[in-house]
Image (cartoon, rainbow, N blue to C red; front, side, top):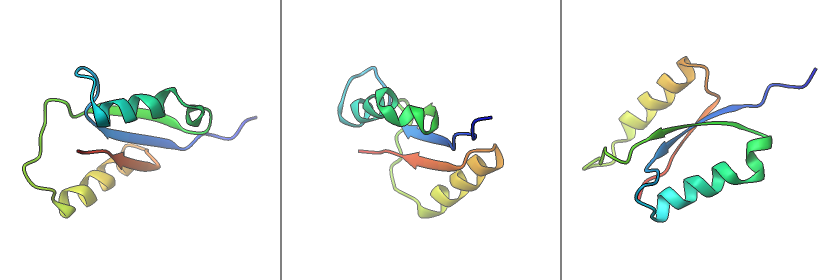
Length: 77
């Protein structure tokens, strides 16, 4: 029986349009890391935060863990 891969929620912009952070996310998804981690992506292409709020990051992390994710990666430009 194989061990469960850690589940990671990635948030950030995804293509289209193809750009810096969206390309990084796609590169991670296409990399050999997918053999070690189970990635889920929440596209934030249509959502732009006017200010980076540390409290919202903590709340998002807690929410993701409540849904069974082992970690959260939030990529922003």
